[in-house]
Length: 376
Ligand SMILES: [Zn+2]
Image 1: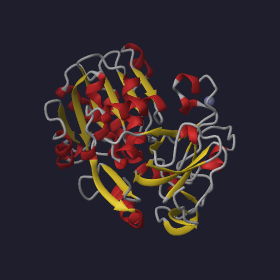
Image 2 (image 1 turned 180 degrees about the vertical axis):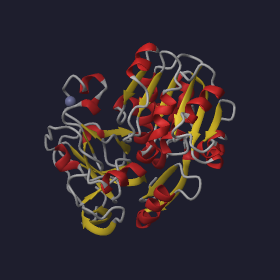
Image 3 (image 1 turned 90 degrees about the horizontal axis):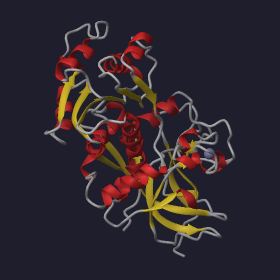
Image 4 (image 1 turned 90 degrees about the vertical axis):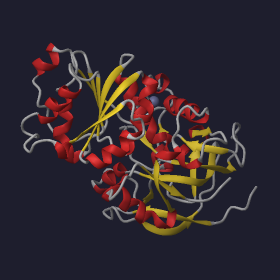
């Protein structure tokens, strides 16, 4: 065994303190049977984490946040059979019962025991998993059950491996969108972390045309540059004033994609609700709107409109283990470039700068990485 220190640096979240983390030295946990202590190489910061913390949705505080983490196996507990000290791994942070109908059919986010390491708890049945494993990636070490770890190949960087979880949410949304080959999609909030993942992943789902929607024309142009042959843009700042009340986005989308898009991936955050429903309203007959962002805007379509055009609107939360494994494979085989999606990287001691980057977005801000340790 390599020398494991007694204490470690962790960015700790306290009740009511969002978005200010406290950097503290805390005890390094000791793995019990079936558990693994991972030395964290990379974690990440996303807006949703701060949003959930701010609105009191994260239980078990004080705690160490971030569901996105990759590193090296530091210590294995008794009975750990499939991993050894030194293995490069990513944490698949979904905790669930692993035996119900949802868990056995690649839908673990619907399990009654679903919770996420370093993030929130969603299921009504706790199982004690979240209580024991709620601490996540913004620390030098993390304690996890063996079954949450996926080995990662040498060709995948720790920083990218940590983002597989976030990309998995987008992957799942694309699966649910059921896009026909050669189809056209709209991506709302396209300039954020999920938006750029969607631009990279969409071609694997048969998408031939992407209309990226966001506030800023300049930010959208940076997204278009990722794949100029299939990405077009629509900037809300360029629409005539009053678009919120007059279905201005619906009209603009239909002008660009006559007949409407086959699907809308909606990553719109709480403050941008009008866009969600206006893009759903532009869907082609039989099209699918996938809600991933979540906001309080009420539908501006009548049920008759849904019925007449056979529109599907589906909600989606998180990704699945299977999606994560497919993404890893695409990255490892060089089919899915991802390193260039990391626009910011901060040390763990600079976690406040990572928070500032995702909340204020003064420049191109896609994936914000937290480099916890420089590991091989
Ligand atoms: Zn289950």
